[in-house]
Amino acid sequence: MNILGYFQKVGKALMVPVAVLPAAAILMGIGYWIDPNGWGANSALAAFLIKAGAAIIDNMSVLFAVGVAYGMSKDKDGAAALSGFVGFLVVTTLLAPGAVAQIQGIDPSAVPAAFGKINNQFVGILVGIVSAELYNRFSSVELHKALAFFSGKRLVPILTSIAGIVIAGILMFVWPSIYGGLVHFGESIQGMGSVGAGIYAFFNRLLIPVGLHHALNSVFWFDVAGINDIPNFLGGAKSIAEGTATPGITGMYQAGFFPIMMFGLPGAALAMYHTAKAKNKERVASLLIAAGFASFFTGVTEPLEFAFMFLAPVLYVIHAALAGLSVYIAASMQWIAGFGFSAGLVDMFLSSRNPLAVQWYMLIVQGIAFFFIYYFVFRFAIVKFNLKTPGREDDEEETSSVAGSAETGELAKQYLKALGGHGNLENIDACITRLRLTLKDSSLANEKTLKALGAMGVVKLGSNNLQVILGPLAEIVAGEMKKIPASEDLSSVKLP
Image (tube, rainbow, N blue to C red; front, side, top):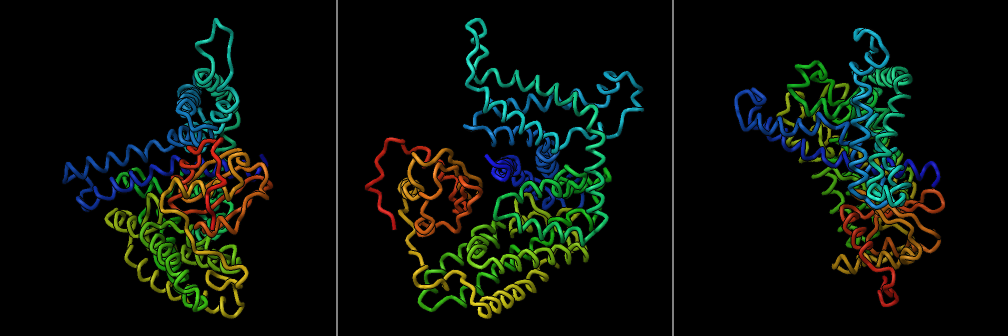
């Protein structure tokens, strides 16, 4: 696997722990709605919900270790997740300030401050990657009969604990420098203030086509470089009391996405509909309406973004620039809201009572402005440069609107056949919106047929890695594809 493909795999695995954040956001959001003034002091139910959500947020580092180990394992087995947990406990226990003082024989007050922050997502991700690699390599090893009980998957947690000792031994000497570098990076970004937030948002959008935006997000949203924007925001009153959050500042790497996802991209969808050929408007309307609603309501933007990022790359660069501008404006004006999943209506509603939400309603005003900006900029660019957005393709390039059978199992067979069958697939995986595949021969994948089946986009990474953008259906389709026996004859499966 090439480097890009490997980072794609890491980025996908990061979605496993990130996927639990909506639970924290919902619990804490409802708690703040119940008791917006006391934040749990005036309501036992509010306190119950806020504390329940905080249990997730306060343990994100170990969730990253478990989630990444599970997400990167070859068969998504619980033994890999257990190994990630074991490795994380070993590393963080050995590198706790008290343990470092004892091991190095120094006064506790002389222990570098970096070890007070060893329980963080950076270490969780590192341990998760190592645990997954050990699982993938040694989970099938057979030991001598005398040690047969510890063969296979039972061997992996043991090896991971040993690896944890090695990792701790290395970090004992290099962690202070790594931590110092991460803090400097975070401080540099924070020192740029709203400009830095805008730069981050610009690259956040640009990395979406290759699926590496998750890795970038972890730097700004979690405690990799000392920013930790999402957990600090969701912590609300607790974060303020602990000095880890500042009203008007915390949430600046999230707030400006609301105007884009709730208003800007739906404006772009309207522009693409209005500029589609008359004979194609009915066909593209269903795609754009569904994708626009998903963006507005949930903040899931990939179905809409993939509708134009490859057909009209210049529009996607404009979109990335406008996203950076939006985040910059929101950060400059200190209009703040946060999210646990994405910047859609649901998260805006839930975060509105959070004590760190500052003039969040102004994001709606900004969003309305961005709706018109997106609409007119996209419409002008599409018409001026004759961009081939949905519904404007040349006749010979137009694809069928057939979406395959409503039966997911049958649809999975259609996708499998369009990809060259089981014999051409070395690995089938999925994240929230994409099939992530490793092919033996990528030339056997019929991109036109995949799009006719309903795929919003097809992304080729290297010579053998392929992503098929399906939207929320991706994980279900992947599961159904895995259930199809390799011996099943697909010749009778009809393709559009």
